Image 1: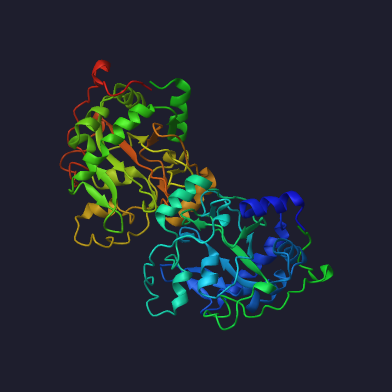
Image 2: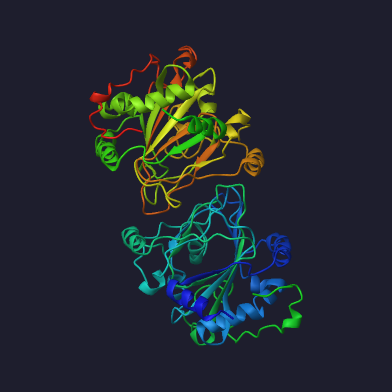
Length: 277
Length: 277
């Protein structure tokens, strides 16, 4: 569980980084699953603009036994319940690879804009938990955040730029997942908000855990370095904040329909972690 | 002139940043020239991949009276002569705009590769002087350098990717100037060199002066921030290192044919600078 100071910082800034969340051994176990995750070609795999490099794999908590169990890690569930003040379930999970020399930009956006517009999530009461699978440095495409911007509510979007090359016939959700975002934030508004809030780019060693609010404004630059920057992102939602099934337009792997309260694994069963938060 | 410590640092690392090189007043005078420089549409103006935003304007020391005089600033000429140990002339000049939300990547490269292959510069004996026209921070596309990499000599290139969109009919020099570089460095070799040298990304206030060697490996990421990052870059070459006219294949604004020793302006005539290095 987070202590009061950490919880207050999260509530105020909309983000919180926890160094040494997982050990090197834990991270090695997570990375050992990547070949299995990447071997499958499915609609859950999104490619970069080059049409060949994997950008993201969605739904890993639904399709991979290891990550399904990791999502039920008692410390992760505990923090999510504490922040959201309710029982929780995993709304979305993904691995973002941000490959060396290849990983492309994520334009400025708020996650909740998608979850409201596309899936009908009633309120911005979800938290994302990123686990760094590689060291994150200044050069390999770290996340950029406007701290405290989650308090400002939904922001004006830019006009969408249409489907990216190679995805012209893809279903409508694809442009939410590639470098050309459907709902990126209006440039003038972003300039104002940046002057007000500043930008921060948290860095940390592999195993670091970063919590962020579903309404915080964020982006990430391309990775032009030789250092990969893979991360697992688990988004927890309040059970009482699950979208109505009638509003949900996107596939299960983008917005889970299973909103039953997630039960933490008993400590003894999380045998692949030697260390807890 | 540089003191011995600064000169040694430059020689060892291949780069040297001088804070407070120019005052805010000087920078304001430089920026006041930008509308004039940008108003002209000529082959000296290179656009970003969007086909409308200016990426660079070359030949400013040849075509703009203000920058022509700035290139003859006694402190700049003095440092160049000191570093190159000869009389000098301006081989190339440009303004790189790196516009907010727009300025694109410069892939990893060595300047001298171009100057040798395209222009026939005999030896890697040139120094570039960048003057920051905006504050350079972590977010607006700072230059990335591998310090000391200029000692490693010419590196293996990647295969060129062909002309960028909109430039299919352009003369052969254009792919040297856009985000798709003709001579970018082989990825595996770059990985090795990065492990060996590390990466640095100098930041500083507008008016900062950054000197770098023509063989140092460098790049810069896109600017996804709302903060512009314009810089003037003046490259000085040794008079005795001028390419033979028969080898020079690129236009005058990319490789000056006028290699007469540049005379520093007498201090009293540089009336637009109230402050010297």
